[in-house]
Image (cartoon, rainbow over all chains, first blue to last red):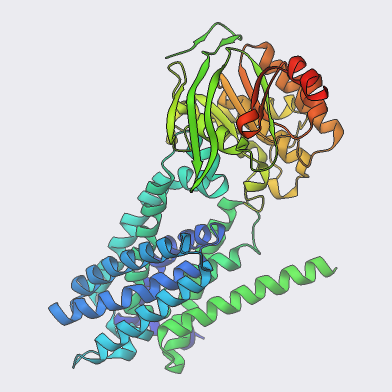
Length: 275
Length: 235
């Protein structure tokens, strides 16, 4: 038992990955809860694919520096999110089709840019690698969390009001667009923070799945936020262990364990409503 | 501060429209409308679908751009004006308790960052009791009927404590008992000196309860005492 659950975390890289993922588990899932409430779940997909071209450009200009890739990813994610939002609002087409179009192009562009460079491992960037979580990456993850949480606390109430009743909020003089943009920036920061360990294909997994699952554990917003954090922490520990013992990359492993937690919540609800 | 509050009664300024024109995309929704909502008046805003009722309401609240003409709010800021949107525009699946929705009404006065503490929550509970929903404070809004939800929104307007209230079809989709309770609340606000503009479909209700009517009908728009308009419409 000790070998199975505790011993892996005696290794330095596993400990770093664990601390990074736990830090992310505190900041990302609450944002996921708001993404779900604002009916923006698909938008999270757009942002995680949107960061990829930026990460590739960062790597092209400054090598495999976490800061260069992170800044590039942040800028690209924000640009793609704004572009997708603008396309989705107008142009007479269906919103989801516009979002799908944007994220497919972003993903293809990112993969193309990375493949064009030698010495950058596409698999690690797409699927993540716990081995890659060095001290710089860990500082980046913890740093992002330290920025995201206080800002989320500050914009908490405007964000609730803007999600619940945008017309009323605007009528009281609330600048809905400002809070929406700030919120998008926080989401992109968490997506970028997660990519080293989880990979860009999975980095919203730790944000979205615990948030989706949390609806089965609480009916209040505060309860859902708390539940999402706990579920994400459980998924982080279990996912890293699964990754360690089976050689599955960390990203898919953590997303799969989050998925199991969601299924448990679904089953729990189904049985309760049936009985 | 462009309005005076003397204890409970409120003295709202007049809201004057001068050759107000509003566009909805390319279409002209309101064409050169002039007139005034007198201080403390209670006006039914009627007209066919697409006549520009909601657009006018949003413009009064400062949420719709003015194409031409002016709205003089007598010194009121748009945030001194309470707008109750159609409740169908709200996300009823949002996980939030009635008390919190009502307490959030106070942000019009305090701004979004002032702490909402016990006094505001107690005030929210009193407002919920006043709209006939005592002991419902901790109930989630998803569990409410359409009528109960509309009562919650009225309670929120109470916390806004605004001198001018704009309501967009507040009686749509509520039962008769709820409608008459909500009307009583409107009359109480009217009695306190607040200016009220309500979008209505039910012309009988306009005749019975609203001293003034603004009937939007393109070039044949009429604005004045309801009795005069009703007799002209009948003729």
